Length: 77
Image 1 (cartoon, rainbow, N blue to C red):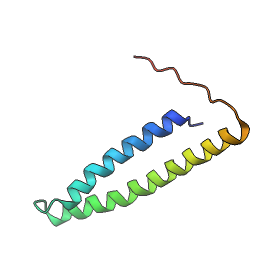
Image 2 (tube, rainbow, N blue to C red; image 1 turned 135 degrees about the vertical axis):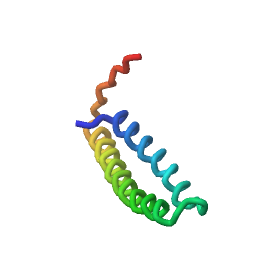
Image 3 (cartoon, rainbow, N blue to C red; image 1 turned 90 degrees about the horizontal axis):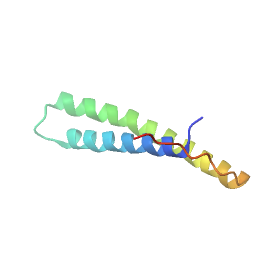
Image 4 (tube, helix red, strand yellow; image 1 turned 90 degrees about the vertical axis):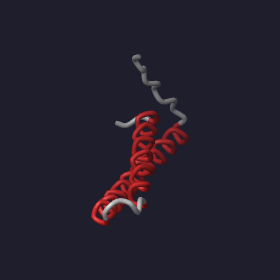
C-alpha cells in the first residue's frame, strides 16, 4: 500500500518530468519529431499524475474518515 509520503514523492517526480518535457515540446530549435515525441510522453505523464493524485485523495479521505494516524516512514540517510 502506498503511503502519503511515497505518493507525494511520486507526484513530485512526475511533475519535474512534465516540466522538462513541456520545455522540450515548446523548444522551436528542436526537430518536430522530438517535439511530437515529447508531447506524446506528456500525455502519458499527465495521465499518471492524475492517477497518483486520485490515489492521494482517496488515501487522505480514508485517513480523515477513520481518523487513523498513518505510520510515519523512517527515512535513512
